[in-house]
Image (tube, rainbow, N blue to C red; front, side, top):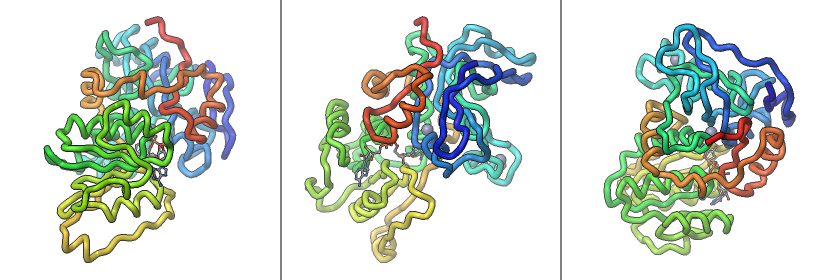
Length: 334
Ligand SMILES: NC(=O)c1ccc[n+]([C@@H]2O[C@H](COP(=O)([O-])OP(=O)(O)OC[C@H]3O[C@@H](n4cnc5c(N)ncnc54)[C@H](O)[C@@H]3O)[C@@H](O)[C@H]2O)c1
Ligand SMILES: [Zn+2]
Ligand SMILES: [Zn+2]
C-alpha cells in the first residue's frame, strides 16, 4: 500500500510499504481522512517518537475492509473513526483510570503505524461506528475534539463563566465551540494571525483580538485556556485569570520552556493551574458531539489533499496556513 513514512528527523516521503494484517481483535480501515496536527510535526522534528521509521496519523476515519478472526462488533463496509490511544491497562496509572498517563503509553500514528496511509489497523475496541449523516473523512476531527473534551473534563467550568482562549488554530476553535455549549457567558479569543481571528468571528465569538489588552475585563476571566504552547501567550494568560479562576494548559510547549507565576496570587486568589493531555474516556463523547453537529467540518477543515501531498501538507501546517489540513488516501464514495 501507499503510505507517508517519517524515515528520519526532518524526512518524510510517500512510499510503498506492506499492507497491514489485523490481529484477532483488530480491523483494517481504508483511510478516507487523516488530519495533521502538532504531534505529527513533533515526530518529524525528532522530538517525540519511540522509533523511526513511523507512518504518522493519529486522527483518522475510514471504511472497514478486513476484520480480525475474533471481531464480531464490526463488519466489512462499516464506516468508523478510531481512538488512537493504546493504553496497557496494567500499569500504576492505568489501574487508577488514568490511561492517558500510562507508563507504556502507545498510540496509533505515534508509536505504531498510523492513518497517513491507504490502510491502517486499529483495535475494534477503539472504533466508533459513524452515523449515516456523518461524512467519513470529516470524522477524523473526532480525535482532536476528544482531546478538547478531556480538557473540559479537567476544567470543571461553570455555566456563566467568561472564557479567554489563546490561539485560534483548530484546537482553539474547538475549545471555543465547546465553551459555547458549556454555557459560557462570553468567549474572547486572542491570536496574532488575522486569518485565524476571522474564522473565530465566523464561528461566533465575543471578541477576537491580537492582544488581550484590547479587552475590558478588569476582574479577569474565570477560565483562561492556552491553545498555543507559546510561552509569551501562556505568560500573558496567567496574569489574566480572575480570582477563583482556572488556567488550562492545553497547548504543547517545548519540553524545556519555562513560564513563571506569582505564588502569592495563586494562594491569595485561589487560582487553579491545570493541564490536560490527549484523550481519556472522551472519544465516544466526542463522537456523539460531532454527530450532533458541534463542529462545522467545512469551516474546520481548510484543505483536503491527496496522500501524495503529505510532505507539502506538513510544510503548509508548519507555516500556519489554513486550519485543519487533511490527506485523503481513499477518496470517499459518499
Ligand atoms: N492537550 C492536548 O491534548 C492537545 C491535543 C492536540 C493539540 N494540542 C496542542 O494545542 C496547541 C494548538 O493546536 P493547533 O492545532 O490549534 O495549533 P496551531 O499551530 O494551528 O494554532 C496555534 C495558534 O496559536 C497562535 N499563536 C502563536 N503565538 C501566539 C501568541 N503569542 N498569542 C496568541 N496566539 C498565538 C498561532 O498564530 C496559531 O494560530 C498546540 O500546541 C498543540 O500541540 C494539545
Ligand atoms: Zn493530534
Ligand atoms: Zn498503562
